[in-house]
Image (cartoon, rainbow, N blue to C red; front, side, top):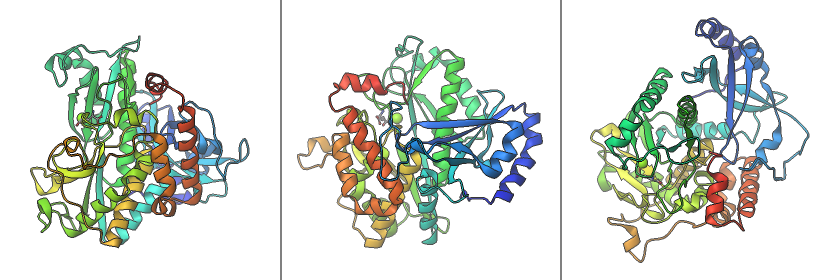
Length: 446
Ligand code: GLU
Ligand code: MG
């Protein structure tokens, strides 16, 4: 579990790492955080400034709490426009020299007010608070986000001709994929699988599950690393939900398992497929809140061009063992530790800290209410007239989010309102766009 460290601890950490960073040839450290539109924003410092930055943070303008995918700004009740400042404080527990960006190291940042108190709009702080609430219940969560991406050539066209999951595609990009694997591994990331996916130019990597905040950090680090390796190979990368109109898109499936005292509550229990009662209630809580949670996990207008039936995207609010059209696919795994729940409806336009924090908050509410898990969907939900579709547009999702008492309460009011403002503004921004225009506008932003 990541902890917030005192100023003195952070200074001691910076001092303790400096010699090693110098030996590693590191010139500077980039501090990243993810805004409410799901874009990573950064600042960097030369190594000589790391200690000062660890102690006081570096300045960050608060208006990025309401920045949109196109870098324009909207307003929320707490907006101060051009005024004010925040401090980006690197979490040096996660400091990582970047294998594909020689000379640079990376650290995820928490955002603080200038007086050193946590910024209420900090998304990473939100994920940490909800994780602490889970732990107070004697539970823990292991999470991981699958990453799908499209590689394109300099002209922006998919850079592979080979078939989905095909060896041809693997051979075409053999050196590239080796470098992706090497860079991730060198950075201490536990890669589980790497393969060509189905859509044109698409690949996928999965990494081992870890704590919720760590998993959100990891997903950002993996994405940055893939992008950096790609750049070295003259390739462009898109994590956007839809790259090619009408084709399967890029998902960002969230895998979760709930644990108590070293026991996976998704395995060996008396419920369906071995679920323990706590796991059933937790998953029921997430399913109940799913339309509103899409505002955190599928937050772009482009998300709804991916989240359609028959694309393995999980467009229906239901669950089923190994059901790839259900928003919640239950995975039995081959060992007790592997059983987990996969939320397929989410994508990589999400801020992973908001997504994971929101899902955990909804799961805890399911536990509090003792919510029953609805009956399982054992076939393609599209074929059942009765299956409930998830929202089909960003504005529908935003309506559900606005009505969600649960999320309103779970997020700090400042963060809740900023997210709402960004969702409304992006829905409006794209209201008159054709699907092709939305895809075009978003394609290279993620
Ligand atoms: N690419 C699909 C999506 O948009 C998922 C394919 C799969 O891994 O099941 O989520
Ligand atoms: Mg996949």
